[in-house]
Image: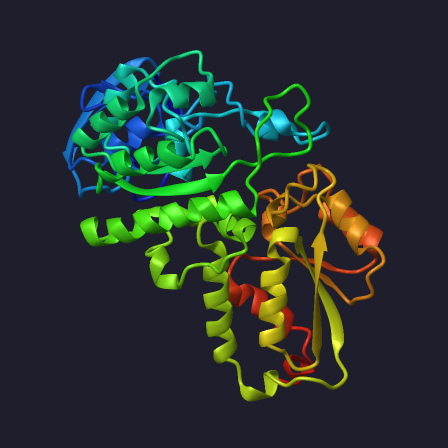
Length: 442
């Protein structure tokens, strides 16, 4: 596959070779370039044989460079092509539970190992052929993020309902032997892949450590839009507590045996079970934080550290105060209220407002899935100077909610500022601190 050059960086290797925009890349070290993964992997070598085409004439360049030194070429295409879509029909697929009116991009069922490598997306590997699996190994595509769900293939096949059958343990062993590391997740459905099935999954994946770096245990997400779909039970306090008891036992065993807790239940599991989050040290390097594992503990630790660094004049209770609201999901309400009560900011009254999720269904309680309509319905009668929200409610461009309504529309409807705040505790404290009269004076 050929890729046409759009831009050459001044002073780069490509610039020094005389390559210009419009030239086409044919091969590197005798290999054609399928996609960005091939390009990045082959460019990482210190000895390069580059074949380019200019006006139909091919030119070969041979040279040495530093490892990972870029060639300095950008191309017209993104070198990825069409996103590889899912071949499964998962019983718990969240996309199948979306209400009408969502942004079209949210309905795409991607299952692309290249996006797993580059962005941390979880993939099932059911659409990865033997040849493609070998390419992953050849290109040293590591670490990957893999949705295992169950190492028992019968249970996994039942959950995924894939058009393609695969032996997940065989695939993972191949990756292990090829030097590829990966993080795993199990989206757990009560009565299906919990209990002894989950214990087996933990044991088999832990036996692959350090190829398998960690396992996140996540409760199945169920919306109010499941008409015609399988009847899957949600976790309740009792079933979540039972799962946490088992995983805590396994975590203790594995810490002694292999030096890592390895198994990391998501924050939501602790919220459902009404249990405290583990201490920070038990999250190790927060490797699964983008999967909802350790977000709350990290927020607490970051907020408390930043608060401790504040001058004493910022930490006074009482007096005349300006009121602001933090709008969040139901599950984060109690945590944020404790944080605000424990850490007062001079002259600021912070009210935590939990938003019921009527758009997806009230069983959905996380802040990241709060929509503009539910937000405005909840906050329209609240008396405050501003509303703080987590930036996770918005798409990456920061301008639009999941229900395709812009933040400017919400601001206009509420008649007050709506301020997106980053995920860190420092960012949250800084956003609150700005409303203190002390901040105005300093």
